[in-house]
Image (cartoon, rainbow, N blue to C red):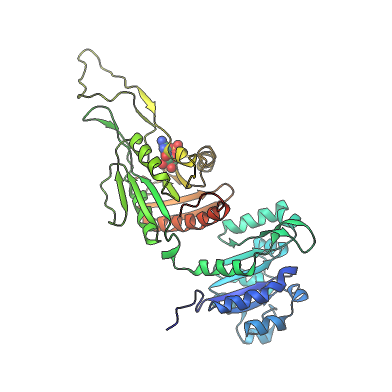
Length: 417
Ligand code: C5P
């Protein structure tokens, strides 16, 4: 029996808009079908000025959909049915106009109406003149679509049909096909072979042999991230503070107590890590001096003073090391969530920061639930309140996606994987 094709049985609705790159949509259709996809075509009115519906019908093997108000087409697969049919709506090329209309929620022609009427994932592959792409309004529109969960594939840089050079070229067909295959790849493969190191739990800062300073972190979030990363195919190492939790045997566990020990173990793990997730609630300070013997109450004094010194910032040091991994931090905040999280992202040189509001009951610290707002340098993603297990899966999927982009951008640097 031949192995299953990566897009076997996947239903892709390909939206074609009116740009010079529309001629590539025919080739894209063919290559998606080669990979096993069932492709139906929707064309905007201006797309038909660049490539004929007849061509698209011939390559897809199905009649092209191009009108919202076509009684004949509605007799077949009506537009709502078509919107429900798709496993993925891919708009390639997506023009500046289509992107703006999608953002505005327009429903006066077939393609944007289908997007509005569909609960299926949507991916757009922008293609336009570089000036149009870089225009603040287009950037705003694209960012708004990303925040809504729409995938943006490309654009590529280079020479444009109009003679300009810059970002705005449609991604090449093989890249679009690869992204489609990656999109449908089972979650189990999204971190296949990636080395993920996670710090988890609290740290304990000794005062003397029997006393310490610590915090209420349970380690649940870090441990559940470790399990999610394992499910997604990663090689996982957990550097754990003192917690009462167990991990599957496939996960390498390094137990430490203090922040200084966690710092040492983390820096030692950097060379072997592609993704570093700092989930631990590291004590900001440790005692300047750890007493060798149990400290005694002073009979003549009702108070005592401990001198504390600052602990090293583990994730900041990892993020500034040579051949740094992709770095993800956490920010537990009670107020000004976004501002504090973005400040940490920049100050610690992170790639992503997952912020949670610890002032809300039943989420975050010690709870089984969590909700996160994740920031990259220029994007924001919301992960709604759910079990830490589910939130971990969603966060790891996002990390896998962003790590892939990061790896592409840094592919010239030393390759550790
Ligand atoms: O600065 P703050 O403690 O709020 O930053 C939180 C993030 O930084 C978390 O990802 C935490 O694991 C990490 N961190 C660290 N080392 C420290 C303090 C925090 O890695 N000493």
